[in-house]
Amino acid sequence: MRKTQAWNNNWQFIKTDGDFYNIEIDESQFEAVTLPHTWNNIDGQSTVDYYKGKCWYRKNFEKPVVESEGRILIQFEAVAQVAEVYVNGKFVVEHRGGYSTFFADITEYLVEGTNNISVSADNSSKDVYPQNSDFTFYGGIYRPVTLITVSNNHFSFDQDGSDGVFLTPNVNGYVDVAGFVAGQNNGKVICKISDSLGTLAGTGEIDVHHGQFQLNVSVPNPHLWQGVEDPYLYTAIVELSVAGVIVDSLSYRIGFRSYQIDPNKGFILNGIETPLRGVAKHQCREDKGIAVSYADQIEDMELIAEMGANTIRLAHYQHAAMTYDLSDEMGMALWAEIPFTTVFEPSKECRDNATSQMIELVRQNYNHPSIIVWGIGNELSLGGESEALYDELRALNDLTHTLDPTRLTALANASITKLGAPLRSITDVIGYNQYLGWYNGTIEDNAAWMDQIHEEDPNIPVGISEYGADSVMKWHSSEPRKKDYTEEYQALYHEGNVKYITDRPFLWATHVWNMFDFAAAFRDEGGSVGRNNKGMVTFDRKTKKEAFYLYKAYWSKDKFVHI
Ligand code: GCB
Image (cartoon, rainbow, N blue to C red; front, side):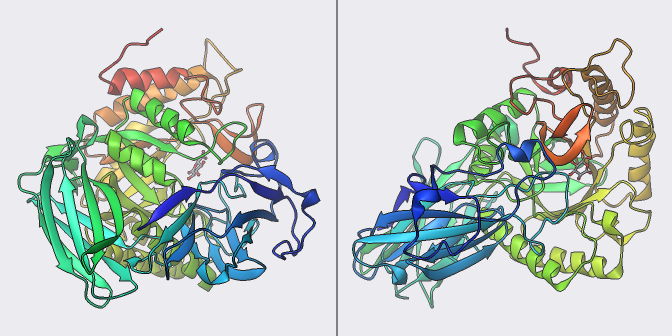
């Protein structure tokens, strides 16, 4: 049977490159660290020359006990940006992509007794995306690591970082369960689905053929997942048995829901028009950088819920598994995306990397009811529009539909994207990043602009994937003006926008940029270095800005401030 063990303690770290995968290494220069860890937690939030390079982590461990012929794997929930894994001095696997999960099957590399694992992390890579964007590219093993032991027959761990089981609940009362099995081919898969009280709601089983299976489990009259109003989840336990003995078991929380996105009526969830109004977010906070804890993630999600949001754009990369889990539980509709922003020269490396990142995003997160759209890119026109870029995006869009025929695709366009430009019609829905009243124009300009994007593309669902203004908490004014970085101007900016948005239900989704101030090392503005200050809440999460309360008043059912 599968056993998992958190593997975050007793790591050694050195902030430089070298042959640190060798078995015989003087570890006196290393420092003891606990994961999650980043080496940019301080410099990444303050200076443009934060440390980028290849650094090393090492850990000595006893060979885990595993059933005969079982496998021993290490699951890395993310290593930024390029990782190489070595065991006992031998290369095991490389992973290119700083925000997604991968497995290292280390079974064949182990010896009896004490073993060593060495992992390099490199945040300076030029052919892994993003290469250029308005946020700090942290380095490190900054999400949890898990040791997994399984018997030889198991649900397969794929190169795409998924665990090989894909569940598609249908509101008509069934769940499609498909997947892959490694090891012996003649097992049986049993799926048991229970409601939130633990009562069995449906069960089914099927024989495995050639390492694959597909079955249909009937769940009559399912209780629907209705976003923040009623985020009802079922639990699906999927078991693999061989010769009547259960050899592997996985558990998922699933939700039954259907949706459409209409160019005039916006987002419709289970037949109910549900305007998506919310925020975008990065994964980082003061002093910890990107290496945040589970408690930090819960605090972030609770702040988002308190503001009354019902959607999150998880910018600009794959987020932690716990973020998707919490969104399922809280009913947040998600825009989930790959790190593909502002590309200047679409190249073969660019295509390969965007493709592998999309495969990982979709396959690893397929089972989450909260995910509504897969975002294929952000502001790519800023690097210049070209046929090569359009081809790149068309290919990515087709790939995404093939990977997941049940969901829609989205693209976040820069607001300068021209009328008739292909970037407006490649994906199923689009959003615009618009900063009228901040970088240019006036707050009032937004009303006419919102009507314009609808009139220009009446058959394409349009949303606002970003809008925002900076405020640095030390600045205040009784006569707030554009770009004065005051909390008061930021609140005025959002007051205008929230009214215009409320009056325009055709906007399928709107996302405030950003829920939290975040690290953007190259920035130096408003007297704040290394920070994008467009958050509703400060980087340390200690202060809710005035605009936070404004949205709470508009969106939340609980409009009062608790003192
Ligand atoms: C954008 C980008 C985002 C930036 C934001 C800003 O359009 O997509 O990554 O952080 O603008 O604050 O300028």
